Image (cartoon, rainbow, N blue to C red; front, side, top):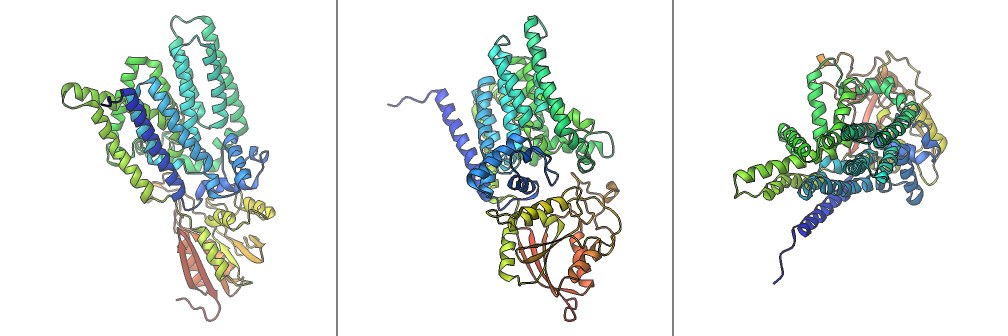
Length: 565
């Protein structure tokens, strides 16, 4: 008769099953992605057009990313070519490694049961899954957070271990270079270690703490002055993220509620979606109390400190509370929640002996697993139909017919119309200039008042025998967390600048009897409707319309026989 498996063996089997599920869900997410969109596409244009040295310079299209991530992406491109799947290799690998690292540190630090709960929540978090398929460094941010915390745990367990101190100092420096929000994690680590060393510690240990802190502080100041200060003080960034800050001002309670919700979404999507965010917060509190009793206040600071530091920075208007920028705290909150869930399950089991705590833990994970599977299968990710639209143009476009590219479509157009085996680098550099934050065709430019006829006639490029007319920015500028009520957004306009639609329509009319126009549907205002109306009022008639994944191709006819339909 085969003996039943040991508890440790069952835990390993469950961990392998959850890891396998998490990796499978991330593979599906990568395969389901229909194209590059938004910021990941803009970052990919930088990766495709720059070498290693150039990637150390400020990036085009208002993009920011740590250079180790950029170099890893560039290496993948050199090895395998410029393809969407290749660009997703680095975030996919970091997303999978995050699961392994989180399981190990939670199991070793907090316990096997808590480790399984944390692994299950992270493996099935829809947002952690999505960021593992997005060409941005957010998965790397979360991974570096877990690695730094794991290293700090070794020091907390034995503050006399010189190798552990050296490893922490080195890993912290690597994290600062590799992850923009790592400073919040390192600050929490220093406070946690200070609490651990506050009583009865040898002066040598305090010197080690001070030395590590000085190394990190000097490196942070250097990075801040060289890279981050420019971003923090950039007027466009400050304007865009204003509503995501927790600083005093209009709608402060709503911004605080939204900010906390942004931090909790990746921890348990189904609980926040089901309006059970309060229970999720309660699990964090119970987990923090339980950890404090078992491991002391230093351990709580280590896990909760980064979020507290982040909220503090946002309260003084220096860091926005947006999910992709707070995702690095998700693994730590998941650890707190995992302890809180298990503590609650044990409390129920003690009062109702017939109810096993393990079953309660498992039942909490069931909705997460079901939702993650459904999410990965049913939600294809952000759609990008530009490749299909480009194929349509290649089939239907006639010689001499100009192509108008709406300013919000310039990035996708540049990426998917370029022959990356023989790229026209002059064209790509020119597009990066006109579509950058200071250029007339920036994707999210601020309003700039009335427009004059002819002022953007120079936004033309001849490429592969065709004329490309690049659209000027309209003045409709998207913002983070745009308030829903018009009365709450007095500095925001839904329609284009006065005269913009008329000047753009005149540009199209002056280039031929038939013009093709490419639009994307991610406009936050009514600028597309404004332009189409102006085209019809100027004598244009829409002959055909093809839509694919949020991208639309119009064939527009001008002339005496083109009365508006």
